Image (cartoon, rainbow, N blue to C red):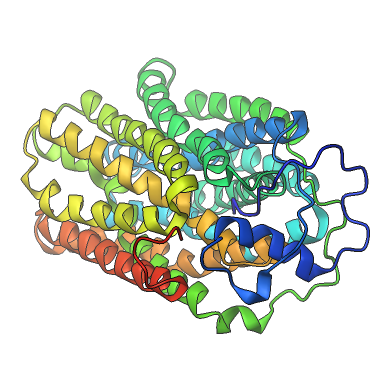
Length: 446
C-alpha cells in the first residue's frame, strides 16, 4: 500500500491542511509526477507537503524495517515450503503445502482495501500497532503447530493479516511526505522486503539445524516484535485531517480506464509472479543441488530484488513510472520463459534467480507509485487497497495451480514455468495499454 505523494519543499508549513479543497490536494499529488500528461480531475495550483525533513526520513526508515519483517518474511516462504515437505508435512504433496503460503499471500493482499481505507481515516499508527500484535501472535502459534490445519490458521491467516496491517500503512505514510523523489523513497522502503528476503532464508537454514523449527520461528517472532515496535514509533503521516467521511468504496474508481487497466495487468502478473519464489528451492533440489545450498538460491533471488527495488524506482523519478514498470514487467515474464527452463546447474539457477529477482522487484516497487500518479491524494490508501484486494485472488491461486501442474506432469517443471511466464508477459501488455491511455507519445515522461 505504499501509496501517496511526495511534494515540493515549501519551508515551514505550520498549518498543512486548513481549508484547501480536495481538488487542490489531489491535483498537487499527480500533476508533478505527470507534467506532460496531466489528468484534469486531479490538477492543482498549490502543494502542501514537505519533500524531506526528520519526520519524513524516519518514516522511510520505519517503513523499511516494517517491510523487512512483513513482505520479507512473505518472500521467504519457499524456505518453509521445502522444510515442510521434508519434515512436519512430508505426507502432503507440494500443491497442498503451497496453500499455506498462497493463503498468507491472499490474506495479505485482500486486506488491502480495508487497511487502506482505515489509513485514509485514522492514519498509520493504530493500524500498525494492531498488525504487529497479530503478526507476532501468528508467528508464535506457528512455532507450536504440528498439524496442517494449524499451519493454515497460524501462518496462513494470522501472519497474513499481520503482514497486511503493518505493510500498507507504513508505505502509505511515506507518500504523504514526498513527491519529487516518490519512486526513490518508496523504493528504499520496499527494498526492506528484499533485504528481509535475503536474511530470513539464511537465518532459517542455519537455525533450523541448530535450534530446531520451534525455536527458530520463536526467534523470528521476537525479532519481529522489536523491529515493528521501532517502526510504529518512527512512522507518521503528514496528513493531519484524515478523510473519515469518505465512502468506503467509490464507484468512480472503477470507471477510471487507466486504473482498471493497471488492475487487469496486475491480476495477470500476480498469477505468475510469485511462482518462482515458491518453487525455486524445490526446483534446485530436483536438479541435484543440495538442500543446504538450495536455500541460498532463494536468498540470491531476493538479493536481486533489492537492486530491483532501488535502481528502477530511482530512474523512474526522471523517466516516468509507467515508462519503467512496463519493460520491467515484460522482462520478468521473458526471463521465466527463456531463461528458467534452461537452468540445469547451480551457476545458471543462481543467475536466473538474480535476474528474475531484479525485474520482479522493480514491479513490486513501482506498482504503487503508478497508482499514486493517477489518483486523488485523499484516495490513495483506498485505491491501492482495492488493487491489492483484487490481485489477492490470482496470488492465492498461482502457487497451488503451479503445484497441481507439477504433479500432473510427473515432476516436470515446464508446464509450471509456462504458466508463470505467459501470465506475467500478458499482464505487462495491459500495463503498456494503461500507459498509452495517459500518453501515446512513447518519448513522453509518464
